[in-house]
Length: 250
Ligand code: IPE
Ligand code: IPE
Ligand code: MG
Image 1 (cartoon, rainbow, N blue to C red):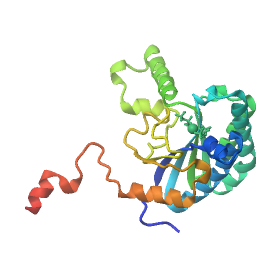
Image 2 (spheres, rainbow, N blue to C red; image 1 turned 45 degrees about the vertical axis):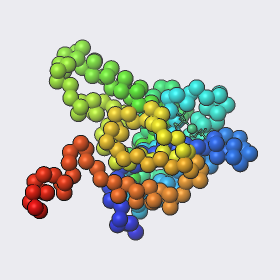
Image 3 (cartoon, rainbow, N blue to C red; image 1 turned 180 degrees about the vertical axis):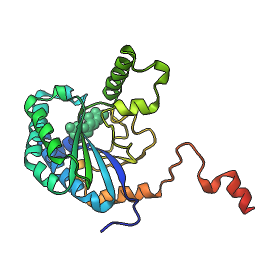
Image 4 (tube, rainbow, N blue to C red; image 1 turned 30 degrees about the vertical axis):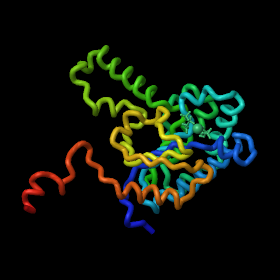
């Protein structure tokens, strides 16, 4: 049942952080934390439709995470393959449309193939859009977008002075998805770590101290409730404080 205090049709972006620290706090290896994180993600995805979330974008592996020890990177990549293989049919059955954003060329061919298969299988599903940022960096997204527009200028299909915000939006990896309404970061850090730099320009932020493997549906609901209390202004004045409104009530 829909929770009516939370607006529907939301796009929520999440930085799934704290897996390693969670594992270390349990005396376990970091990779164990990533496995637990994958389980927590399953519950988050399942909860989305009932919480009014229409799009969910999750930061699973950044372009900078390639700098981690080889063992952790290969463990994470195997986990992604395993997750896709085991979960994709269930996701399709739940009406999830999966899309992966990021530099795919850096991923193993086997993982690239699985991603294409998963995207084809879930294409057109309309209950939840699940966008997974994998080998993703916000700056790289903007660099690649700039290269695409520069090509248009070079082949004279566009003049530099004609480039608008809409054109840039249309060549980012996230297109045609809307910008996130809310960003939730787990794990206690209060930074973007190169996530969706263009797309988060007017999103609301919620930072939670909890490590991602401990994140519950109740935490998710509370973050959405906090979002529902925010007043989004996009640089304008809220209608009830505008001069004409206050003069009318005088
Ligand atoms: C987030 O958890 C998952 C990835 C970055 C792949 P971390 O691995 O960053 O966990 P912490 O922040 O070290 O605890
Ligand atoms: C951001 O977390 C990337 C993901 C959660 C996938 P990091 O753990 O990599 O970020 P920093 O290094 O703390 O900024
Ligand atoms: Mg981290």
